[in-house]
Image (cartoon, rainbow, N blue to C red):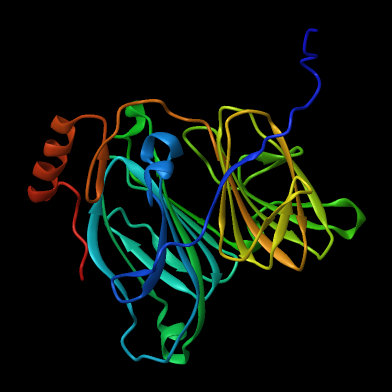
Amino acid sequence: MYKNKYIMETKKIEAIIAPPAPHFVGDGFRVHGFIPGSPRLSHRRMDPFLILDYNSKINFPPKEIPRGVGVHPHRGFETVTIAYQGSVAHHDSSGGGGVIHQGDVQWMTAASGILHKEYHDKEFSQKGGDFQMVQLWVNLPAKDKMSPPKYQAIKAKEIPKHILENNAGTIEVIAGEYKATKGAAFTFTPINMYNAKLHKGGQANFSFPENYTTLLLVIEGSVKVNQDTDIPLDQLALFNNKGTDFTVEATEEAIVLILSGAPINEPIATHGPFVMNTREELLQAFQDFNAGKFGYLEE
């Protein structure tokens, strides 16, 4: 019997990953390094996502000098920071920067080379409080790796929202498209990035091409996927590359980060803060950085 190409096939979960032991990046970000955390989550399997660092909820006491990460370089990819609680300030050598608060997103394209620093916003640092963030590294294709640096500051109020039926909740479309609601961010390759904010019992349906790398991270609450698999708080679900459609139902009030991107399918050469296609390009990146070609940024 021939398969009807118009019948939607369920995209099933390949693995559920508990948060790895946390470590500090600088003194301001206590993160669980999901990607690349194991052979299952290798750069090749997670393409185009290079790193997923999850700063699960932590309470920072007040501090006069803001915690954070000092000046450091990047080339060949993009960093995306999503603020769930707390505030982060950013500055870079291309002139980009600002402060993101709860619900905001900063999307920095390092591309040909940039210096940047990230730290707790001064006001937040002085008051202290709950802090929760996600930072992604998103790869760039070879043709765009040496494009000019770019910075997108996306405020919560600017993120398009799709209201679900039956008071199920809201899908915030950071990038890509959800049921004709287009995302706020510019991307070089096809990437869908949503915050699904679901009320208890609320359900949302998702559909992506089967070859897209697709992930789900539970930020708040807990959910059930495809009516049969429970995903608890702070856990990551990796979907397999068969099927296209899946459902997410909140078993309590929930916030879920949904990621799905088209693989770039190019060689990856990476060392520290640089992600290129060849070893020669990596060596050139270090030479350019040491020669001051990434600009200047005061500590």
